[in-house]
Image 1 (cartoon, rainbow, N blue to C red):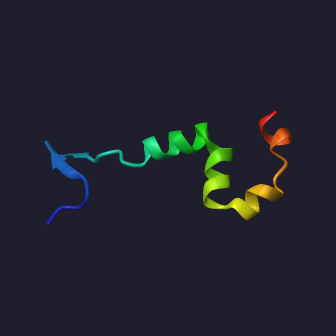
Image 2: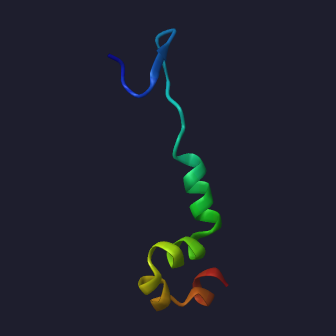
Length: 51
């Protein structure tokens, strides 16, 4: 049985499943923090971090 990545011509050809999520979190970090961690988000001074 192979791992998550398939083997093709002796090379690993793994799918990149987490990059889209990382890009979304980078683009919408304050919104994600407010959605997932509203209490923590309320403690952060976003004007200093975002500008």
